[in-house]
Amino acid sequence: RALVAGELRHEPSIGRRGGCTRRAADEEPHTRTAMPPETAPDDDESALLSRIDDLRIASIRPLMPAACLIEELADASVVETIRGARGALSAITRGTDQRLAVVIGPAAAHDPAAVLEFARRLVPVQQRLGGELLLVVRVFLDEPGGGAGRWSGAMYDPGLDGSFQLNRGFRQARQLLVDIARLGLPAGCLYLDSISPQFIADLVSWSAVGASTAASALHRELASGLSTPVGFHATAASADAAVGAVRAASAPHAFLSVSKQGVAGIVQTTGNRDCHLVLPAASAAEAEEAACGALAALGLPRGSALSSCVAAGEAVLPRLVKLSSLLGPKFVDVWRSGGELPVELELPPTHRMHHSIFACPVSKEPTTPGNPPMLLPCGHVLALGSLTKLARGSRTVRFKCPYCPAEATTAMAKVLHL
Image (cartoon, rainbow, N blue to C red; front, side):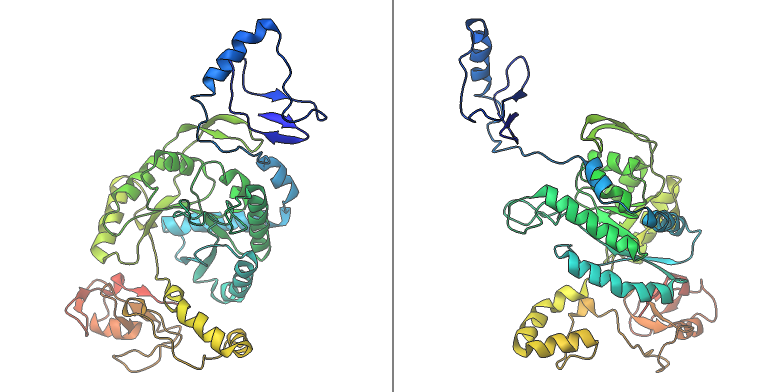
């Protein structure tokens, strides 16, 4: 690297004496000073090395140290919110807190203002249902499918134009997480590498590792040192990689990374016992039971698995866009008022799981907080009172679903929060 007129620029040629040189600020960037005769061998060696080193590196730009950004964007008032949420999530995944942890939010945080508005709307929901739910705002700043011409995420490419302004992206991401924490809500993030967490991890209450990287040693090592509970996503085909990741991350590790000061170093961790599974929405009850049994056999919390829910909004998004173009300002007014849209947007069959108002098909009565809708493993939904009658008041007696041949117990059903 060379400092040229105040700019840090990468120079691929590396001689025997190292690759960092400093030019005077008033020196022309392309001016070369004749080397004394005794340095000629080094110069020849550098020329030779330049033919085999950094051949596919276009440029290396300076990245601000995480410590500088943390000092710039910090708020001591959010510490208790984050600490409390981490402790609660740990208790929920261990089974000592009976509330339901709900990680909810957009698939990508490409629009920070929209994500923050979404979080604001969750505040009254958390206040109303805090005794039953712990809401975690999903703020996914990395895109697992990024690269090869695709968008890489809000941190890596905040301009959505391939300019990769990472310094701006880290600052924008950190500001968003600070703003969400000020609302009193915890945030959850997905990590794709071991360096970007240094910029935001202190503001995160729940961390995730995708199914495509659950088998990666790098991500297992990273999870072993994170201060948050970590969810490893399993695939619909198998939970083996995720179970192995939970086990590996619970043990101490030593690996290479970069400190908050930007210094490369050896990181030694103590292991993270707050790791758990995140099962896909399509997981059958038998698959979930097998995965939880594998965790128990490893001496890990049996009931720690979270389950993914469907992303219903994605299914109707094209029709919403078309409808907004037809209605213009009227669409915005209806959308913001929370009223009904003038046309029905039908969800695909695989997404018909949640309803704002639900009447039990057996009892024909609307559900209430005391008699909530219950999702059976087969996908059908009945009121709790109807399930209790079918099971003759027992949580373990198996009964047949009124709408298919599948059998279940009341204990296997899950509450749907409308």
